Image 1 (cartoon, rainbow, N blue to C red):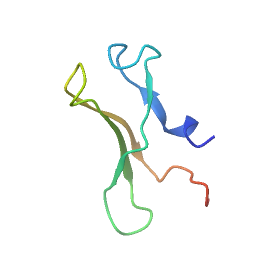
Image 2: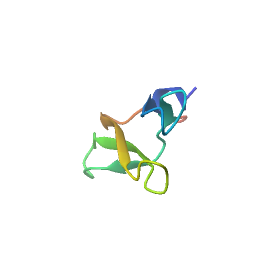
Image 3: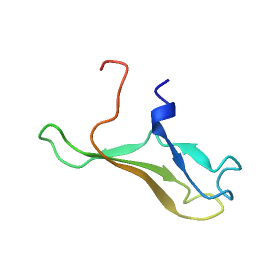
Length: 64
């Protein structure tokens, strides 16, 4: 359920399905609705990069 809305595209060298769940996120501001950046950290992987999958409103949670 909730992982599906956090699944974003990455290169096939990162994942053969070309998707990764990007649960890790940063909150940009403290005032609601604070935008989020969801990302996948591949700095220890084959590309050595961080992939930004989403920037926008807070995604659904189990409490929402």
